[in-house]
Length: 302
Image (cartoon, rainbow, N blue to C red; front, top):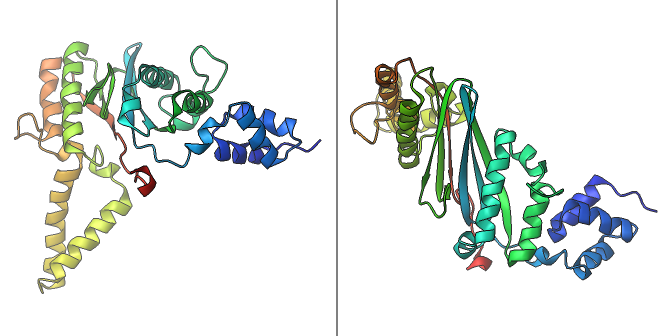
């Protein structure tokens, strides 16, 4: 009997789209022969996903789930993709996305842990259940991304833009606000900020949270632009500093002008709300997922 390794199971899963346990069974039944294992899965009807696996899944749903945890709160976002918007409106698909979002709470939105977590009401993992649904619904689909925000004291507020079903749509945002103040007022503020995030697409919450590589690239571009004007290096340095501040105002949440009033920076809005909430408020973080972001559809999908 051939030794069945994790790498063999992974390879067969990638070839067929079948669940991990089914792939392991197929390899055991065929003494580790990859091609025979593919045939075994096809004969069992477990490799129906294989023909679909090459097609790009850029539609689907982004879902949010928020749960109070003592004085604090946890919020998660998940993106589950399908090939067509039609499937995103399928009741089975919508239920699956909702179940996955609820499951993500327990793992704080950690994608790897979520994929390996038990799907509600089954003995299968979330990843295996999604693979089964590919065969059942007949389209390629995948759990692509997950994010989480937690606050020990305060709220995590959520907002769904382009809602397709309750708690799921085209864009999902969660915002964490840490405070001992009025929870209802804090939640209302958090939702407004989440709506701002959906529209304004910040790259980071604070300047210090920006990817250093992004900042360096921006500095290089700004410096090259300034040099093209023929200014001396000491002037160029000051020009870059000024333009970098503008970049922060456009890209960093707390530096952005609040879209709801068009005047006040988001950081100041949070600071000013402390009086109404009844306690200081600290911005704890945010996550934003937009459906299909970064996915390039192949020509074969047209």
